[in-house]
Length: 503
View 1: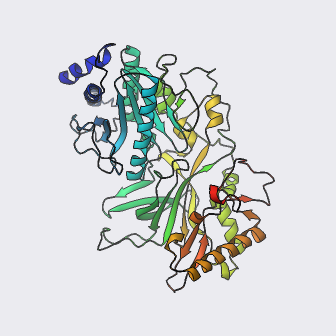
View 2: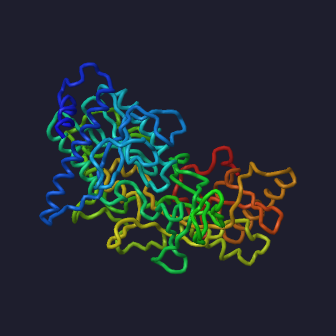
View 3: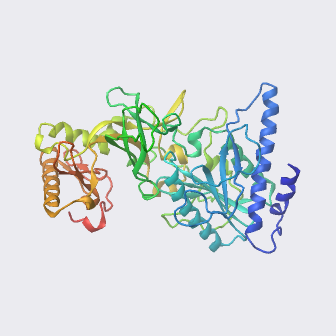
């Protein structure tokens, strides 16, 4: 512990890094993480012996290797420092084998605090977040730390926006306390507050993921599905935060291996649905005070490295951790009719289409059919809360609220399974596929009054039934609207894929 304390002292001094190089910060920041973990473990261990334990959930420890290319990277980039969540009985020491698949957060360090360097740090963290999403299919959002000189900003990469906290000044006692509070929050909070999805778990016995999908027939219950492969990952679609998995509801009888592969019979789509009422509550008016969170991407906010007013109580305004009896941010209100939101979502659209067109045998398999699905809830068994932007970010100031899409987490299983259009084998086969999709699109509009609004080659699949033959299927009704009930579009912005917007 004394060694860690000595190593971190230069980081607390205003001129502790006269060279302006970033490499000394790697060691100082890692030593700080180890020091906090050791003190936290000792403190809570002492309380536990007095029967007043505070419920330590994990230790936040740095990886041993710095400026390294972690396992799971596909772009050759190196991270400065990686942080990992470890069991509470782990020894307090740097962790071996840096991996994106086990990283809780990534740290990007710069030697000095300038506007240009802050922007570089944000951009690099954004790139790293893609690799974390790729390697961790159970992540809902990603944490990061940007460190420029003796200032630190905590970052959240959520489903549609990226946010950074005000600067935490490590040369100031209040600033150091703020970063300690954030690390304590990470160590004590539930897994969902760290960005993990507790409805997607790795089944070590079966060697595959087990995904809970809301049951179609029994509200409030879930059906377990099993998967070992995704076909669309969130790292590719940051602006939509959508994942698709090949899965089955049949529990494997033996561990999944190359010799005993999982045989999928459906697709699970895990997505975040827009809700046009935003947060449905008055905005938190900070009067322009920069103690509120600052956007780092997809907007023109003041993410320029300015310090703002003090350290801004980052753990309160950004971390949104649940410690002790602290209430979680909850949406929707008790009197909110969630069924109305369901009807406007893709799952509601597909259910209406199936109800209207099920008698059309000629359209069987030309559009997806819902097996199970609904809204995703997070939290403990005693307090399950609907997963939404509000649960992740909490209250935002009025300016941020107007620029942040309010989304709710939804998951559903669909059949049949199709292939991308690029796998068509011949021109006659392509003609059959396109003809089926055109007939399906016409029938959906004529008989259901539903407009797809996003026809593109990405949303046309080839289906090859076991009985033989081939046909086309129209998918992805995220942008669809029900013209029988919608007199105006709730999202007036342009929708669809750019080359096909006129379709």
